[in-house]
Image (cartoon, rainbow, N blue to C red; front, side, top):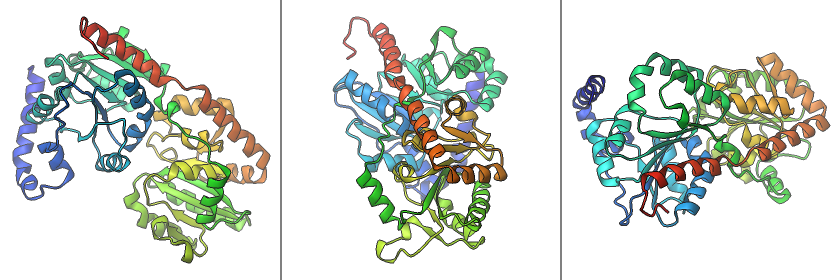
Length: 433
């Protein structure tokens, strides 16, 4: 263990001593479970494949990749860890038959990781996109467990951080056998920082293109519109994954469009559903009738201008009944969110200028003519107003967006091919599959 890592482990130890009383008296809290690891997968006599996802977004994007893993590895156990409580709860509710166990992602503290790897003893560790920690990587390397990154992306912020600490990070990333990135830009950034052998950087594409987003049937679309109390004349805007600062902009835009006599409704899905009540107040302050999705009962729905989606798992389907979609985290400097969900339904997509986490996808959709980038409140108003006034244009934009989505599939299969190649070398003479 080198000096920087020793210092890092020591700081973790100090923090653990200081917060121990908190963990002792709050044993059921999320961080406590990540620290104590009460439910480590013990296996079925076979070494499992460990797949790590940070949040709900990464978990969902990995679905088709997990399907490819299952087809390739048969009865080999596949375990998935998550770093956020919401992702863990979502995964437990879904009870995906592809997954043998859902685990609490271990905190990056030496005794915690040591215990986790001792009991789990994975044959490979696969990290989806991000969330790579030094102690975890070091111990995986010590145990000769090959590490893979799939769907990797290198944001401008990550690029700067990696460049600053490239000399230090080079040692920690040695266990990474393949770093499979979403785009050529991600690959170029990773090569420039020099923290991994260039031969191990592979552009495989974005797993999100492989996610199955089937268009809604006419019956399902009719049911959803009726369930929400929408009339045939109503024009629905769905705004997904919004952040603070964007709700105020949307409130002003919707108010302006309503004053222009458009029969418009807004369904807004905040990135953090715990903000639902606060967002409800933002729209109510503007005189807009606002309701929470969870509080609605069909018998007493009444009219509404804005509905705040405070439930999990509905957004994907609700994009399918929208006339226009806006994807948040893009009018404020967050980096954007997944624009493929509305695109897959054939819905024109609007987003702001801050799309660096989805740079390639957003550029492709602009080039294809399936979306519009808006820089501010005024441009957002103009874009929605223009599309509402030109339904044929909106329909053609939506069709182009869906064509783009369908034409870029295959990242999961390409990533699996690289993993199998490495594992066959690592386990030469033994059955991998």
